[in-house]
Each structure stands twice: as C-alpha cells, then as structure tokens.
Image 1 (spheres, rainbow, N blue to C red):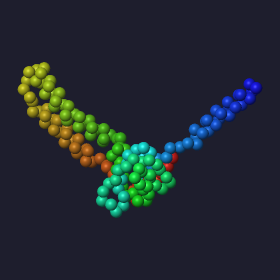
Image 2 (image 1 turned 30 degrees about the vertical axis):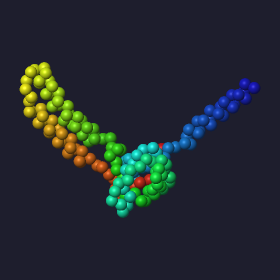
Image 3 (image 1 turned 90 degrees about the horizontal axis):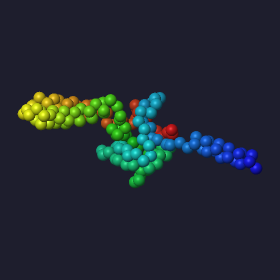
Image 4 (image 1 turned 120 degrees about the horizontal axis):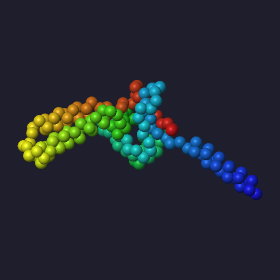
Length: 164
C-alpha cells in the first residue's frame, strides 16, 4: 500500500514538471531579419501602432495574440496591416537614462544651489547656477528628440508572434 502511494505521488510530480514545459507565453516580436528580437510586447500591455493607409496612430491593450493577428478590446488587427509601431515604452537604454538624469539635474541643481546660497550662506541669487540648469535642460531636450520613437515594419523590421 505504501508503494502504491509512492507511485501515485511520483506520477503526479512528473505530470506537474512536464506541464510546466508545455505552457508558453505568446509575445509580439519586432526584430530585424535573421536577428534576435529587438522589442517584445506581451498580452496585457498597451501598444501604439499605425495601420497602413491611415494618418493617425491607434492605441490599445493587447488582449490576445494569434498566429497572424492581435486581438484588442475593440478589434482584431492582422499583423500584415500594421505599418509602424511606437517603441518609446520599450526603450531602456543609456540615452533614455541620460535624458532623465539631465532633466532632473536641470531642475534640481539651480534649486539646490539657490537654497544653499540664500539660506546657508546668506548670499543673493547667483545667475551661474540657473545658466547651468538651462544648459542641462537644453541637453535633455536635444537627447529626447534624438531617440528613436517608432519602427517601420517592412523591409528592415519584421513583426511576428512567438513564444517564450
């Protein structure tokens, strides 16, 4: 009797282990031809995209991914209909980080310098720190506009549905 319980337990554990390998999460992949995925979108994420022939960008929550379509709460969009995808939410790179640091520094440096000069040292407001803050803000704006915002689907980038 003890041997039978062990067999049933082992069978249950094996089924549990193998079932873990059979489930996969589907994702929308944007990649160059013959390259690993560059950007990925999962079910439950919001995506901005442009449909071929339209002027405006659409935005929606991905509710499901088929082999050749995206299911959203209002429509089913075929992958072949998508012209471009907005990738700003997917970018986590050095330029993005540097832009944020410069923007915070543009506000923080002159503010802290002014508070330090006026409250601690009793000096008047110095224009040099505000000039440095303006330079930092200018650098942040320039880096913001340099960053890549969208990927055109077609010759260079491909759009497909894959599994992890």
